[in-house]
Structure formats: structure tokens, C-alpha cells
Length: 168
Length: 124
Image (cartoon, rainbow over all chains, first blue to last red; front, side, top):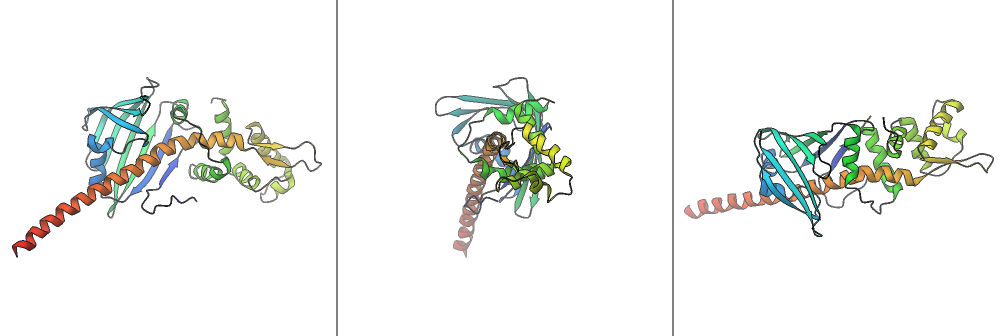
């Protein structure tokens, strides 16, 4: 197991099974779930955390209510723009958000994603599930942002095998 | 099912015996007999798994030496781990940032709470 160095770093578990259409992530975060829910539904807060650091989140629409639309773009320093949009199906404070998700770089491939927040004392377990329309959609989505890192394959072999195991 | 290289790799990785074989080969090359030893498998049984791994480009088997050792091929595995890695990077980084935002909010709340407390103290 690799350590991230900082002790408060949330550790996320991923289940990405071969040949399946979904991805599940589980994270325990050191904050009460009312706050976590707020960080997911308040556009100003959402813009501060969603996506890699190298992008600025540009929020066009963020209607955190059932039937509300959301539209967010990641803008790179070079001006590159990756836009995402969807519609909220359920927004149940402070426990669940269920919405559609579409990457406009590959329009027409709509996924359904649900974030569930469970209290664990002062902490919160966040479970994210995203279900794509096909295995190819899922695999394409994961690969779309691919920029091969310099990581050594052997270092990551252990991690990959662990993931595949937890996916069994 | 698609037959693109990544799908073939993942199908090969989907079996626990084959993952154990890869884990063993990560330590160094080994003969078919050596690989069969930890499992309750016949030589034809293990050969079948090795063939799947070979077809997926995850291992190669030397034709030169008489004991024909198998060895791990890092390239295809790297491709597979990069694929998973990109999604992980997105969310690992997002959750780290979320954590920072939440810690800020908790701090702000504490300060507000402390200020209120101090006002109460002043009134005593």
C-alpha cells in the first residue's frame, strides 16, 4: 500500500470491474455530512474542489434541486475547455444527489451518477456510483483524459491488482 | 464484447489465478512448473492461463532456454494501470480539494462560534 504522506488525506477506493458499465468510488472524509452536502450543492464551493487542480471550474448553471440543470466547464491555463452537463433527478439533503452526466467532448453518451452521504460519527462516507450506457462508454470516459504518467508500471501493478481483486 | 487491446488485457486480469501468476512474475521470471506449484493445477491447466496472459501481451515465454521461462511484460500492464489511473487522479485530486474546502468551512464555523463565546464571556 502506498502512503500519500499527509495524514488527513482522504483515501478513495475504486471498483472498476472489467466488462461492466459502472464505476463505484468510496471515500471517507473528515467532516459532517451536512457540510459535505453543502460542498456538493453550493456552486461557489463546488467550483473550489471538483476536478483536477490544473483546471479552473467555470460554472454556467448549477440548480441544486430535482429537475434543475447543471453545466460546468473545466478551463485549462492554455484556454482548453472541457464542458460537462446534466440534470438533477434527486437532491435529498443531506443524504443523496442523483443526476445525469454528459461530457460534451463526446456528446450523446449520458451516464447516471449518484452520490450518497452516510454519517460516520463526525466523518462522512461518500459513495459515488456512475453507470454508463455501455462498457465502451465507461472505458472511453476513463481513457478520455488519459495523459500517460511517468509512473513505473511495476509500482502500480500492486494497486491495479488490488482494485481488480476488490472488484471480484 | 469488444476485442480492443485494453479489453483483452482486462479480461485476462479478471481471473484470480492469472493475477497470482502475474504477481509471482513481478518478482522475476519463472518456469511453467514453478508457476504451477502454488496452485492445485495440472500443467495443461496452468498452460491455458499462460496462453490467455500471452495473448493479452501481459507475459512472454522464452523459446531459447530449455526451461522456457515466462516473464512479465510491463508495457501492456502500464497501459491498463494508466487507464484506471487517469480516473483515479481526477477523483483523488477532487476529494483532496473537497477535504481542504471542508476544513476551511469547519474552521470558519469554529471562529464564528468562538467569537460568539467571547462575547458571552465579556458580558459575565
